[in-house]
Image (cartoon, rainbow, N blue to C red; front, side, top):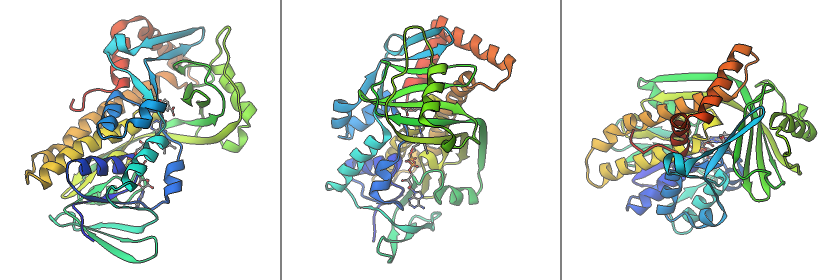
Length: 389
Ligand code: FAD
Ligand code: DHB
């Protein structure tokens, strides 16, 4: 088998990269070790920045997003007794959209299987080789158990946090930064109409709570918990009661309904640099993880592959290496901005049990809710900064 770009991983990064390359006349093959059903069922991110929506729309993937996605003009920031709305259009001229990552992935897979480049599910033993040369290859075993070789001009490592690509880049030298936060999120998906127009980010002495949604009849909610918490110890009633306590506001309550998914997500920051070794380029969670409080993980993956698609088109069509050479630095500038914003949101909203920390957090929240420049800083970062920083 031969292609121009061999793409490892069919998450949002790999699938969108393949789509962007196709639109520019570059062919690719996507290799995914899970099944289509598994990939399409993973419940993950929900908030799309303006840039992400614009990119998906320009790539011909905006039909269902614009029909079923929910455009949001702000968020509510809450601390006991106060629920304050940040209005994004007046603060920074942009909005965000709520449209689940699962839906983005379904749209990308449908487009790919409808006449797009090959997308192979259920492969195993995926191993990139000779990435320091101009003709790398990927060895893998296909879904029928047959060993295969994919010859390429470049390899995209979009295989998420646990994939093989990052280790290969690090083996040639590089650096990793990591911070594990002492909290986790317990997330639920519920068949209940959201009781709020905008997402609510709520500070409470018992811990952070987040009210999000997927549709007019489905809510997505999160609670800060200890990372050692077991999901089995959280009955639906215990979750709803904690949400009621942490989001309490006079005359308002959380809407309850059947819980359809419940899981505990660890929270960490991770950055791996550089994002390139020879003809192997990393993008998305393969190179970096952010804690979810800033809603940045999926958006960063989209920003990475937007830059990477430009670099690969220039490399393979124009035979110019400038954008490939600057890719890692350009992507990492944005990664660190989002890492900082995600850390800042996480630090402002998650309680540690320490009274001094709590007073600092409340002071910061009052500042964001009373100062336009402070609110604008949050709004600009949340809705997404320009591609190049
Ligand atoms: P992934 O989506 O991880 O895709 C990588 C793909 O590579 C996967 O399909 C994987 O199966 C495949 N793969 C791995 N190894 C191999 C291999 N050896 N061979 C072939 N294929 C391989 N972000 C937010 O902004 N907000 C959120 O609320 C949020 N919630 C999250 C909840 C969870 C449980 C997780 C894990 C992440 C969450 N994120 C969230 C982060 C966001 O979902 C990720 O940043 C996003 O999925 C990154 O996309 P990606 O394509 O880089 O990686
Ligand atoms: C969702 C996830 C986030 O991490 C966030 O900050 C906002 C919303 C969500 O899953 O809807």
